[in-house]
Length: 310
Ligand code: FAD
Image 1 (cartoon, rainbow, N blue to C red):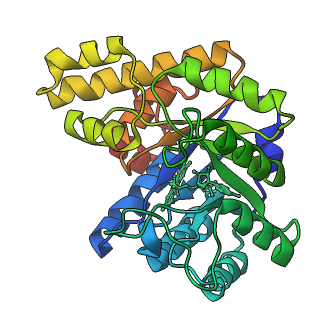
Image 2: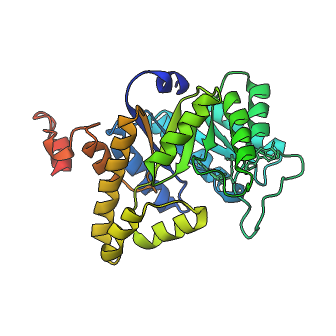
């Protein structure tokens, strides 16, 4: 077990994977299987989301425990303030510490299901800054604390400058940052420059969400009001009913985006896996981070491995 901040600050390339907690037991078995297979892709760490409104707290805790203890992945747990009085936050942090998890992505959270606006829970926290401060107050520097960043601004705050300043205040208290998904690398590059100019030096990881399906992509960019370059929309239009072609384009686009970010000096990449393996595998192979599976020769003395790979 290790805090991830040290690794993230090293001057080398690395990547990390995000998962969400499954709803069913079968889903959990499938996910753990996938996490185990994706271990071979060498993620620096993995993280597991905290369901909207605290709806998955048990499942999230179970997932991070399995990832950290049974699979041996360096794990970070998302934790939000929605529907979470201090006592529940305390319980979650205590459980994390007990199983050796040392990394938390501290978030305010989205509004609870069925609510249009976010409201603080009685006895809870008003925003991510409050949560970060509380974790530090309770645990000193035991946890490596990450926060969320928004290259296009957080959609709720119409005052972009105030929103940016809140982010800087939050990020200066934290150890690393993962961003909201985006499809225009330039926006991310400019935003990171602005963050650095504001005196914030923590490692920042771009959140890369490979396009996996046309309808899901449309829903997502509609909800988050994400800017999508016209050439991306134009490339998708003729293939939108062909799921395989959309997935292939999603992989190609993610590789192109990561390469643009690399050319601008980016070293670390965070992939939203959507609990799926193939696209992310093809992307990290395409970026040359790992050897393509078909080129990896099974060890001759291990017949079970050679069977699995066929
Ligand atoms: P904050 O940084 O607290 O900001 C929230 C809003 O409050 C902003 O509009 C900001 O401008 C404003 N604000 C901040 N401080 C102040 C202040 N002092 N005074 C007035 N206004 C202020 N959601 C989940 O439910 N579960 C997850 O696991 C999850 N994982 C995520 C992972 C990443 C990488 C990202 C980018 C988002 C994730 N989200 C998750 C979504 C996130 O919870 C929402 O975007 C939420 O609306 C904002 O969370 P935050 O921590 O960025 O909030």
